[in-house]
Length: 231
Image (cartoon, rainbow, N blue to C red; front, side):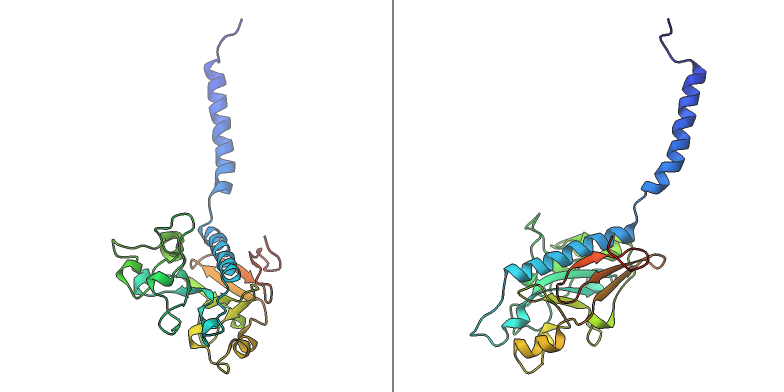
């Protein structure tokens, strides 16, 4: 009665495993640009969620609409000069359009962290500092090798790369802190609600991935290779 493999059978099994590994493993490698896009979609949706559950309306404050939740993309020294983003509500100092530490959203998984990949204004927001209180994953350059984030003209104003959301989740373009539009929320939104789908492009210099933020609803998704549908 046969109780063990022969040497030939063992060699054959090893060869088969090797062939299968050579075929399967290349298809299971991660795509950093795609991973970065999936993460960003999740955080844009989270920004929209915060805006909808934390309505900033205040009848006694003429600038209340400047305090809405927003996501801003930066590429400055405090982010190691690579693409990163921050989620914040501009609630202090006259709503200047810039974030300080206490205005940045807390990481819902770890409340000791702020949702920034590097921002100016405090050493604790500088990703190069040992006291950094942000989230390294939000620094798309350091974590995923992203070299550029661009936004279509439909969602940028004078080079401002940010999106805010109103109380029903509609996406708004431009800096809320610089809002003019007659000095009130209605006139500002009439001029700055996104009127066409916003396309955000992430690239590592070789591959690119597109994200769409749909006008009016703010629905956000990663687009397929032909940029015609969500995946």
